[in-house]
Image (cartoon, helix red, strand yellow):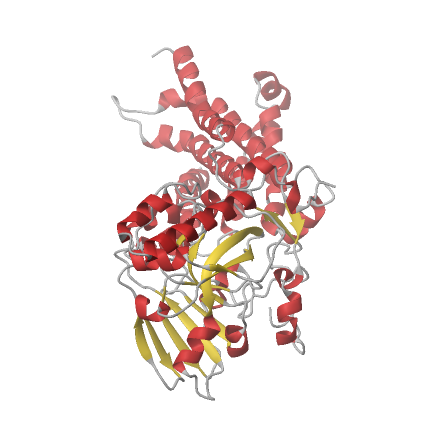
Length: 334
Length: 196
């Protein structure tokens, strides 16, 4: 059998956790110096020793500082991280094209700052947040989660973000709020595929969660990864991360969050309802009609030794989330 | 240009994509999922060479002016067809070695779960048969049957197109483009066949 454990990835292909952590500690130390009154432009200098990203990503200084000051989350994971250069270069973001390399090549034209997020629907305090207001007073955490794509590849990503629940509490949902609907930016001038005539996607991209899923502490709004501002191709400046669901639920570049009584329409289930459900929970037992979900290729996958590992129910988060679905037929509500 | 020079030129031109992907692989420039990149690349080039091969006859018959014609292309059709086979075999081998990891216990399961792979099996078998019978000696030996056998290239092309179409998820661009090209290549033949 050539099925291997994730630890079989050659060590040359992964960023050792110790080095990564050392970088994080260095940045945190540097941040406290900055907080003591050193010019904020010194941030660029701090980026120099980090080997994760060689170029500084655009973004306001306050955001970079807040991200660099993220604290580690309790959730532990023993699997090696997928290196930054793969996380930021292997993306599905169809607003920029259909190849995995298109988003990294074409998303630089997006301007993620300034950014606003409109929160509407069944809430007592509907409002439009500027990104800075949305993050004001929020303690960002580094959250290292498995990411399982519906296409049967997977990664381990150190996100920087916070629980969606924290934001939801601030806007006070009413008793009618049963679902949360998310919408991606629609700006064809900066998202070229939104102009395509051949796309089956009815723009803007839409996703949704049930209220209890949205309130779950694992459900994250991410603003960074690898201690850096989110690259545009990864959904800058704000994206959803729901680690027990397939990656297409992780809606990117969010501009609108709406609380609804009825289950919202979601992009992929609008295109192919028999292939992509509303729940999209990772489940090795429920095959996609065109391929099996029993296994996944953990990236980076070597050529002569494909890094194939078994897929876990709820992507390995069953202990935390299985209760949300205890009376549901997961074959029916895929 | 003498035929031999043209042969050499076309041979080396047709090898460029293969050299390119081998270089990218050895230079480790294929990103997080090199297996998928190689399989997609060789698959695309199989289709391109299939189209080029199928374009020879319509080009020869439709673009036939005194100073501008494609009659010279006819003698190179066999080589173009063999390059189609080369890229198809690379595509299949890349799938078996890099994606499947030569674990044939997973092969049957993959075929059942991925019908778009299933449709390529007759196409690949036929394409190999065409390659094997592409020599002059085989042409003589098969006589009339040679032409019958080699007409299966149309079926191969349709199966290859279905292989692309069945994988469409969010954009029909490529499937539509390939479909239009295939129609443009097959319709003149249908017209000539009916008129005869």
